[in-house]
Image (cartoon, rainbow, N blue to C red; front, side):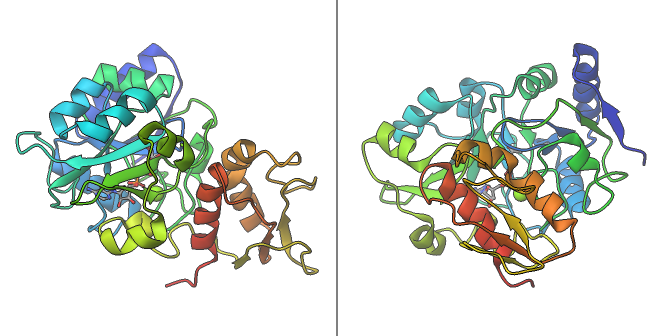
Length: 318
Ligand code: TXA
Ligand code: MG
């Protein structure tokens, strides 16, 4: 299969929607990372996602829809979830909701769970494709399983660890503005909100909206064996990586923060800029074939998501 690179115009978006209706896989831009989209109602198409990514099949996928109303027809959206949806959607927030029995979502999307992860993306092209497609799209990040998430169409097509030749098309709308995946929020049986994955919307912003604190990933993990975003070594570059390094050793590629350098995440110490550059910089650093050292990143706001990804990248490889 030759993967087509589509432009970012109405005709290309209609073409993408037509391919998706036909059960094909299309990588689409979102504000967080590029997603590998398939019709969430078509189990064969969804199986194609797992296949193209080489993804362990127990990983449930995020369902993307154009509107809050569409989301509410797939998952039960009330209480705190509805508050968050109203304030943050469209945006980099995924809500894990009770799955409606009549939602029509392929069981493979939720890996057989009775909950479903849903988000309404903010990216203009993603929204245009969802509107043209007029249905739910399952879309994990458009990278081979265990590799770095793509924040550009070039990443999606990267001969090393990309999906070129494995998917029908990628719609190229330039680099992603946010650069890390969405924040995932779920709820415990007793109704307490859980931070299942730190991401593009700072946890602090969510806590402010809910006027309550979130149970954090370290504690959430034991409640969420079904959140494989929590898998160690999920965002693995080839090179070894160590964190919180003030002074790199000779021979290490240094990802600076708050200081200049060829691999600086943000010269000015801006966490939003660092998040947007993270995966691209990791890729470039990995291309040096030398150990990677990363400067300390403050652990608040988007820094929490950055450190989460870095910890996984630093984790021992399977
Ligand atoms: O920003 C994003 O969220 C990107 C873009 C493409 O939208 N998508 C993304 O999807 O990161 P993915 O499939 O790579 O991440 C899905 C995460 C996994 O950690 C998965 O375990 C969790 O969502 N998840 C999905 N359904 C779940 C469920 N029912 N319960 C708990 N976690 C769930
Ligand atoms: Mg991913």
